[in-house]
Image 1 (cartoon, rainbow, N blue to C red):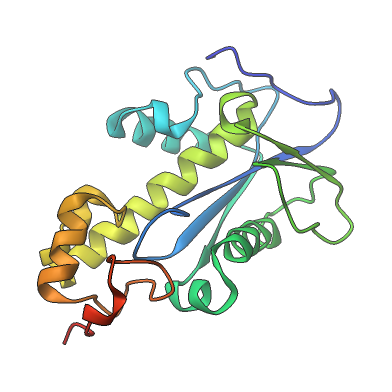
Image 2: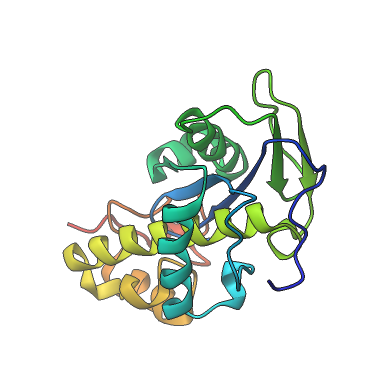
Length: 203
């Protein structure tokens, strides 16, 4: 293990929650909820951002095979534009918890804010994906799922090179938006370019 805590409180069914894609210019925000099995520890768990793609995929399969329960929640770019990215991140986590096959007794949330989930207490942990195993596991599932979504969207709109930048605001991505205009998958409430008046929808 990467020196991560297994639980906040021993003997309690805890579920780690994390999201991916909050800072992107395009695509959905994706969250995961994971309840790990205390009898099946997963070695090498760490914050997804500290792992390369190969190791994330290896750990993803191990998490899916050995966790007591896991689920993914997705909030579209249209919903992000309607309710803002912070609320969309919370909604994605709620949607993930909604789909768990077993009821957690407590939620460990990555970050410093969260909209309470009905009837399940929680605590927020800043940089929790580098502190708790269940949050680290959730970060890996959220990241790998979102990467898959962006790779699929890349096939439809290759000019933005989403298979590489995953929708994040790289110089290449912004230059492509300036050249081609935004796609139907871009978040129009985000500052895609310095001057939004230059933008015309991709057709």
